[in-house]
Length: 412
Image 1 (cartoon, helix red, strand yellow):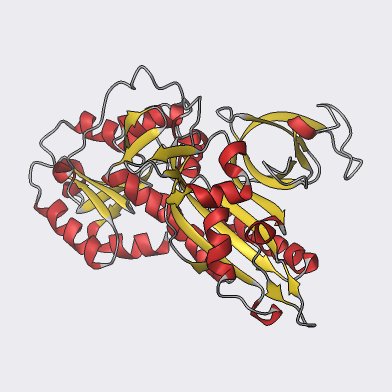
Image 2 (cartoon, helix red, strand yellow; image 1 turned 45 degrees about the horizontal axis):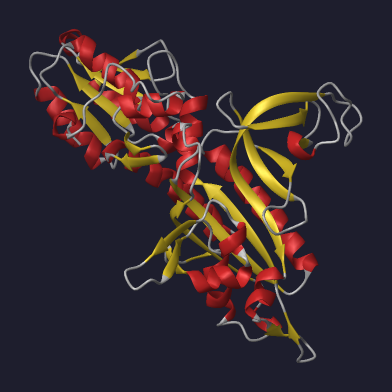
């Protein structure tokens, strides 16, 4: 894509009403645009990164047997009343139609997915099953002031699994846990698995995947010697205590942002809808259900909080909107034009800055946008029949002969 063709432009100053760094940088760099508190439009650059995160999530969910579906966001009130959520979930958006019928905007999908999937499952032989979707969710948040970290409308993956026994669910949870950790690793993050309360209906312990960040709204305690981690809200320990798991490490307090979670829903939703399966004796049983959420737009915000400097964003390679940011500041643009075409022929994605702007403006925009590698063509590099290649997260650049660039990029 040629940068001159982007309808968006970078901003020198962050909006005054944005307090968190992720929102400030994403708006300034032209990734998102704020419509109102907790609601953003995703612009061409932002949508590319959002889709890259979503694709990584899809690949890992497919790898463990998840089947992707797409469910409605508009739900009839009756299904929420059947589960008790209509009156008990305070963040539920409620809508009344012109015909005085009540609807809800989906903040989760248990009420939809349970009758949907169980309508196709007759016997224990049909289990286990896991389905997931990637889509928009809606919550009536009272304090939407953390950019992408706390939205009224947000993009997420939610998966639901159905099991014959608790043992089978427990096995699948372990599989999902490893898949989640792999997702976070692929986007350059290390997440801690914390114990938390079980949500609106479950009395069981749930698990949250937390990334340490000062912008986070959760307080956790984590061990410096093992993987033990707990949300402060249910913790029996305090910072400085000895770890109750390994007995060696010390518990440290930290701010963190939740990027994923898993709930053991037990048999509640099957019982609410009186939908089940026949066991080996032909008797009706209700499945053990699991719910697995992962905030894709929130993850995008967390990545910005973790990966930035005083100049702008530093995207990890796996989620960078483009592979390369090609910048021409030479008086003759022919070499840069040819390089733009050649890189695309090699299946690289390229943002090409051929705008009639100063070199300083182009460099500042490149640093703010944060594409993982910058390739510069200038009068100086042309004298050497070369280009300058500089990773966004490095202060040093390499001069690479133009004819050797393809090989260099493949090796790196």
